[in-house]
Length: 315
Ligand code: SER
Image 1 (cartoon, helix red, strand yellow):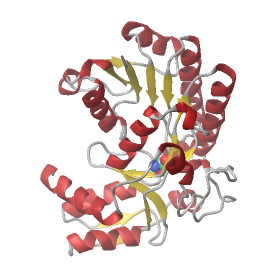
Image 2 (cartoon, protein in one colour):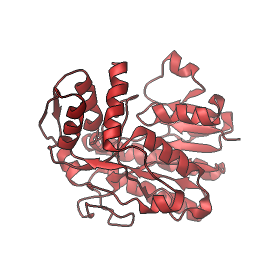
Image 3 (cartoon, protein in one colour):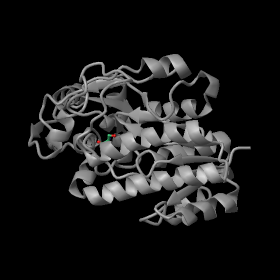
């Protein structure tokens, strides 16, 4: 029987991953952990909810013992742009939390740990087109450094202690439930909230800044599929490249204009431009396809259509 703890359960990914896991494994078998902002009563009544401070090992341990947890999804992290505003905090939070999760997983013989990595592991020296799985990992952000560290730790805990840690390098994720926070790819969500409200949008990246992106249903499919893959087929651990589509702000705006012709955009690049310029334009995800059968469902056009449909109803 799976008993799952999701740390960072109310962030952009957690807000949709928790309901997906509860649907699959039963509502009482998925514990949603929050930290800085207490969820409201409606969120709490959807299933078990606990406060966990993952920078403190004993805080994680208490919940593992209380619920007899055998699987951890560790999603809590300070993303690229927020991390450049406070690199000291990003260093501490991202590295300390992951270390604590891996330590408790080792000590309590947790069956599986899922930890997302990111395209932020790549840097200015990495080949930018069709970036291979095995390549130069010299990121220029604190977030990227913590993700490279996380990938190396995952390999270490697997080889040294047999902890089954798995993860993908997520591209920018586009979603319509919870907003992302503090990322360089956040514009690709924000733009839709402006477009469906018939407001113009000012983008913080230049029109030609192409980045790899993915729609949330594909991101959820990837995490769950990798979590369930047969370990004997996996030659990697927490460092799988993952791709769906790539686009620039200008291409996204043009695709939105096909649905909403009155939408307008202008560009005022800020400090996030340098982060975007250090990341790949497109990703080679052959390892994920070969080792656990990864294949995305959504194209750029299908994603844009669905985002506009869902947000038009919601807003
Ligand atoms: N979406 C993330 C960011 O922009 C990349 O993992 O920081």
